[in-house]
Structure formats: structure tokens, C-alpha cells
Image 1: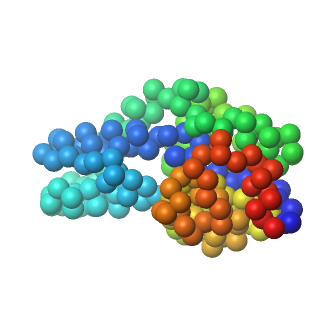
Image 2 (image 1 turned 60 degrees about the vertical axis):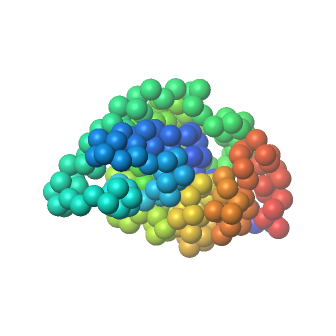
Length: 218
């Protein structure tokens, strides 16, 4: 079995469910523009940067805007999302996360966040989880979004490890691709069909203790 020295976590949909906050902001923007989006459509926006997500959403509403107008719309959505984030609390931590983080600390396994989010540190503070993390790689220091492996390569470096010594936990197909291309063992958290490229898929952290996840590395 490979020696695992670090676990690298995505944020949205893995540590906490901020996806619902994105949905509320995108839905509000769509409604302002005269149409609506479903939770299922919102799922397809996961892992996209905000301009990519905006383009996709505007396509659903068959809306056309200039680039300058699109930037204003993206900024408005981001403002609403940041307002929503301030409502986060430890109650929004997904089931099993606390237990897993405590287990990793007891094993002296490094814990690093790897996300394209630019507000990750703020979210960790609101969730009162920042003390668990040995490093945070976020959108403020990334040149290329997932599925580019940059985020998890840098997260492994922040942990002082090589990627083959790391497990990536991500809930988006692009995140799984990024982790795989970085050279990490990947665990998809969520829908097995959507995350079929992962080395292992779990529906939640309550599904499988870390010891069993390690057993799947053989």
C-alpha cells in the first residue's frame, strides 16, 4: 500500500455545501433576467469559473450581452453569493467531515485545501475549521482552473509531499481529472455516475472510514 502523507480537499460540496449558495445567487440572477434555472442545471455549473458558468447560464435563457455587461452580471452574482456565505456556520459542515479531519490529525497526515474559490479562507473561518488545515491553495494563487492539475500539484507541495503520497477528495468531474493528472489517488464524493473517473467514489464521508479508504489503495 502506498504511504499516504497528505489529504487534499476541495471545498464546495466536500467540506460544506456551498453549492446551494451558488444556486441561490445564480437563480436570483436568472430571475432578474426573466428566466429560471433548476437545481439539476446548477449541478452542471460545478467546477466552472464564474465567467464560464455565466455563459452557460445565459445560454439556457437565450440571453446575449456584451463582454462588459457580462462582467457586471458576474460581479452581481458574486456579490449575492458573498452575502449568502456570511450566513454559514459549523452546522453547514457536511456529515462525517469532522470525524475524518480528526482521524487525519491523529495519524499526522497533512491536510490541505485545494479550491478555485477565492473566499476559501473566509469559509473555513466561518465553519471554525481553519485550525485543521496545514495549507490553503485557492483561486487567489492559481493561474489555471480545474481540470488543470495546478491546484493539486501546489496543494501537494504545500503539504511537503509528492502527489503519489496524496489523496484528493473532490465532488466535481473536473476536480477528479485535476487530481488524477496531478498524480494523486482520487476519491469522488457524491454521484458515482458523474464521478466515474475517480479511483474510488463515496456518497459521503459517513459511508466509509478512512481506514477502509486506505485499504482501497492496494
